[in-house]
Picture: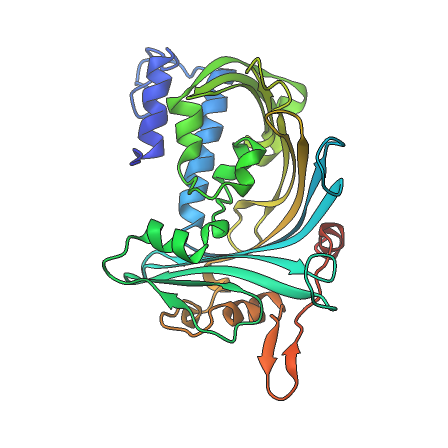
Length: 354
């Protein structure tokens, strides 16, 4: 799906909602003979979402991101499996649009509880695209090189064949979607516009304590039907800090979701970037709940050396090591597996970053 420029799209929505007054030109500037008019809560809500899309597009031009977190799945007693599953996870991302390079990886820590091995190790799924070449792999210690997509094979077919769909994660769009999409194998870039502009109805918006904004939406998409409550913080330039999805599907009342977002100002650029999320969601029929606690660590701009974004590497992951002081499991002879940096809890990482 192709998306219009966010500023154009949201201007169209302002007009459709009757939020462009006679004293405002289509570009948002004042006509010469009209006094300034304070923006309404609805205008501020839409402007905050516009700013989120513009922030996303500016950051994702050239960046690296390492996410460390914990995802828990709690199963109902009727489900015949252990009641609690804890996944210790990583997400790696890097992109330079000028060099046409994108790298995405999903990792998790495994051990005796989930494998036949007697020690803990890292398991990675990687997708590495550069200048028309697509390659990837899935597995633990990388003794084998990347599988390279053949020219006649489509990228979706390659991802499916190599079982690489787990790498998908969109660090801005996913913040305001239903939390079940945190594990969705589909690309969700552009869903801020899709959900809040193209498919949802803005029911109401109000200014609340400390100048924050609270809005309610109704989102219907195929069989999905939710009421959304969005909280945007004045302290963070009206970026979203909490979103709640309440199911309106009669047969699926437990398909809820709630996400809290903590923003932190990036020292070098002055941009607010997502730093921590806590999310929870229910399943369609109430058989399980998922809870996520993830910490984001960004590098943008001059923090990233020019030689970071390189094509044709045998293993892209070590590019992250000097930036994040993180080391990956490796394989060497005659010693065998050499384990990398131990996983840390999100709470430990949050304390370290204070």
